Length: 145
Image (cartoon, rainbow, N blue to C red; front, side, top):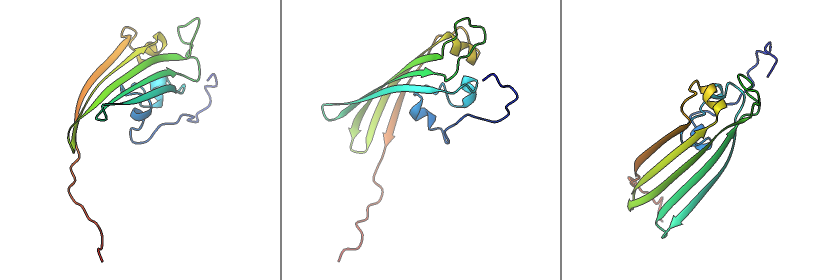
């Protein structure tokens, strides 16, 4: 990252917002410039538990780091950016309607706070409620002979 004369773009970005699926629910990293084009590694685990064969509990844990050290203002730079936890529960109401409740929290490192321009906010969090309706509008069984 010391070659400033290189004008080539060496970053990769997902198309159509799929970063939400892979980089945590808070969407802290949606484009390469969110990490000053230093790259992003997301080491994560996700767990899905079925409770009473009806309710679905999901827990995702993310460990974010860059591929290069962000040296600005730091004596001992570290590639660690932060840790995120996403927890949600899906509750079916009727055959084609369910509700999902979720909470996400991200604890950011000092390096990430400097990159993002906010050196004071260590914890980012949000919660959501989502109602999903999936009715069957049409059915077709094909040609019956």
